[in-house]
Length: 500
Image (tube, rainbow, N blue to C red):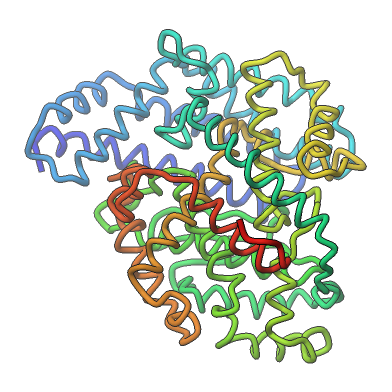
């Protein structure tokens, strides 16, 4: 350890302690906090955010970080921490502290405003807050933008380094060209897949029990993790020994079941980060897209496969004998892969999922770089759903108000969901060359697959970016053609369409 890094470390520890406190408030806000806690808790979050701002962005920390950046005896983990710190300093140094605190207070309360508006099916309740958030976002991006840089590119860089509007336009153009027609062909195929047995009365307690079993089966360690209930399933972590996932229970068995596998995939990433990186600025996933690649990999590529369920489907039948007792495994797997034109992104099948993200990407670009107004957003949303999925939302609850992300200020986040699916497909095809993927699942040896991902993806935290991980693991830079291949092979077979 260099002398400069030795001096810097207490400042890094303080910043991470403050960040941990903010993460805990976020967890509490979404799981246990009472309805009327919002504004007063928001004041606390604002103060803590200001303290975090000052802990990172002060003359002493800047001096030490710059000194460390010139050192050549740092370990890779130390160098990564310094790199991430300098990125955070660069980000915060352009934003006045009082504005940063005011924005933190706004977003701490705005999620509750969004939830109330959604429950009331009334966009006008949320629109004024959303306008404020967008104005702040554009203002902050303007502070940070380099000459000639788009504001939306600044926002994208926070979630997916190396993926600008230009590169994402190419990716989503491929989705329009290949997946939109494939989805239309599936919808017009006339093939009916029975899935009525997935709906019914499923006691929450039994759903929780089978959910915990499946989470543990894929490798979620409950000695280092917990599972709770929230309106919108999510994962958060304090470090690799404290990872927290949530789910929700509905009258659709697959909704909770696969949300748990999804969030467990996020959790496995966090568990796998090396001890010398965890609870540091380099101790999170390489990017939001790479994180999403792991959750969707376990949820879909693994969790919706016939091979995955062969060893454990009997457990599911025992838990829900009235619904599944007479349902063949093959029919269950077909049902959980059924494609449909639905309104809700989080409930979408694999084929239509990227179309939900395409809608949000196009709207975000128009809100930030174009002339789309917040008041016109519900109608624009409905138009795009009609364009890409052939359906029109009946209300704003299942339309523009369905996602929490914009209420949290997460502009630039949505593209990572589609990128994650594409990253996962690229990893999948490479892994099939490295191992008997389906055979391992059929034998219940999911640990081999999990450990491969831990070795090649999880352990590195932010030591590598997403494109570097793909290049090092698969030998190729990001190649979305694998994603198109995966969806075509799966859904052309499932719906008996001609191969092309």
